[in-house]
Length: 196
Image (cartoon, rainbow, N blue to C red; front, side):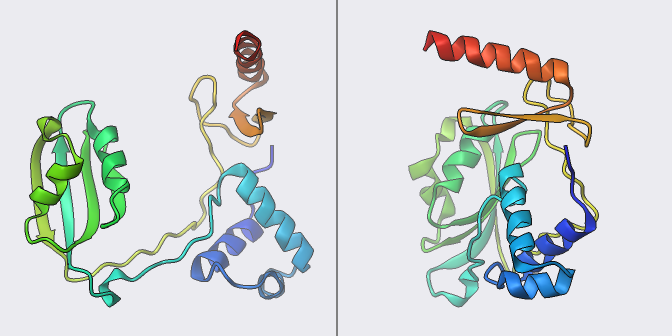
């Protein structure tokens, strides 16, 4: 299985700067042809490294409310549900969840009392505490640096390296750390598919 090389990283960096940049411009910068850049972007999408192309909206330029940073401390095991509920809110920009079930998000809220807004969307019985801070500004600058492609094995959860394997099942690509994990996963997948 092929990982990321310096050309892939440079293509990602250029797309992070401007996702609408023409492949011909990227091709010139990385010394490839536009079709070769297109093939690499397609491969990065298939690998799941590039999930989508989107707009980076500066909400501070829109008059819609007060910009805040909200931290919700959840009861054990409730962090994922709270993060999902917050992510569904129109007012929320980014959501982060820590291993100890603390969820932090940026939001632009029209109401002065954020807790009232959250009460409409969250089960407050699983919320231990909420902190709200007024934001003076935000910056979002994702970088790829020297990162390499390292998904989790679909079977055992170990990190898949360049010696790993892939298989496409039901139109979805799965990554495996070894042939044994791939064989076990495929066998179970096919058994479940037959029973469905």
